[in-house]
Length: 585
Ligand SMILES: Nc1ncnc2c1ncn2[C@@H]1O[C@H](COP(=O)(O)OP(=O)(O)OP(=O)(O)O)[C@@H](O)[C@H]1O
Ligand SMILES: [Ca+2]
Ligand SMILES: [Ca+2]
Ligand SMILES: [Ca+2]
Image (cartoon, rainbow, N blue to C red; front, top):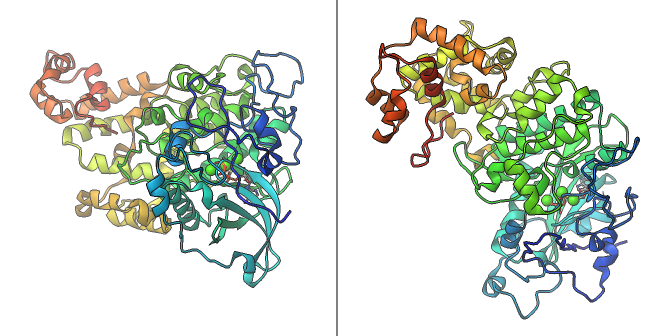
């Protein structure tokens, strides 16, 4: 089994919007041997080798809801099992254009990007002595972009260590973008390696044919396989153990300014076969560095897990949280929240459909569990919890886990510092209406800033907290830049009360069932302390909107010239006019 070369099998598609994916070359080649299930099924299978699929290769169960007791499958069929189909538009972009076969030698004809092919520099500057350092073993897994083999270190620290090597064929790197993707995957792995639930990276090598990513070996298989072997569903207690691990590693990535963009059960591996083995996040092939205020626009990911704002081409870290919401939904009920037979149908569901929380088993799921999932699957990304926040959600409070520093705090405090005194007064009133549940999160974050003896924090506390957690990735994502934007804090300090006003997000609070109560309580505080007469013109300036908004703003002001309750909550929310695209947090 020495032959362990990269062969990517294009997934065919059962959708009507057929995309530039070439069918398998008709001449039988060893690629077919490598991928028994894949070539016959319209969906890629998570059971490429050896592991028995619950279904015969290529067979998908009927999507009809079955109520067979003890059935092993998802109500909304889990098979077609692996949604590992990367969104086609991006594939087309990444692999050049239509008809470009994604494996094998580039044919003479139909290569629209031919000029680039000749000039592509496929030199990565990695070690060239892979063969001398490692001995390759059997294949363990396979994806769109590479396949993974067992390996053993031949010398040095890794001598006789069992390892995993992801092999990416250079033949498949047919565009500058696809080369850059591999470079970035390695860079991100190298930078982030070290977190308990993130795959440990050891080495990157290359030769004329391949790039080799040497990592620690996970012997317990993919989370997807465990979900399937349990018949799709986890108990709440077991689901919590999984979700806490996912949130903790994703909070870490986000703090470093890395968005994973492909979170799904196939990309979490167990260290060993044992039931309580730790999980590791793998596959940073679609990940990217993201600056604090940046929005990404390329559509990547896997259809079932993709966030609505990704489909709208403007997204940031919150897209990962949506994917965790999808995973959580699946763990708790055994069905996919957004399901359709075609990719475009899935996208439509993601954009418009509300997931079902009524059918069995949802009535028996705890209210906290349901609330948790709903707050991850909010279609408005501004209303979603962050990963660190989710870890303080009441549903997970019984779990004993550390709360990581949340980069969201920095963004919110930054915009608070730049807000007008009127807005700050409004936020202050809002922070006084918070319930114990929200305070748990804020208190944890404040403590992570290690307040001084006087109980206050300065810019330095924010800086030190960031530095305590910094990896090399931060240089690339320029997360520390956010500290410069917090400069107004260099002249003063913040106590916990003000921190609460600064670090709350109106959008997130609006998503709470108790929002109306919170809003009216907050308004009472605002009446006592901050509500003063304000003109329509002043309000428009505050909100950064033009005269066209005056008629709307007029309705927010009472006859006494002060904000009404409605006006107060609207003011907190901010006006989002398309033309200004001034997203407020
Ligand atoms: N460190 C590891 N230990 C054990 N198995 C691994 C390891 N890394 C990857 N694998 C296996 O190889 C498979 C493919 O790896 P990976 O997901 O990184 O490749 P990919 O080509 O990027 O896949 P995708 O199609 O999901 O983008 C994984 O799903 C997993 O089963
Ligand atoms: Ca895979
Ligand atoms: Ca993968
Ligand atoms: Ca990948």
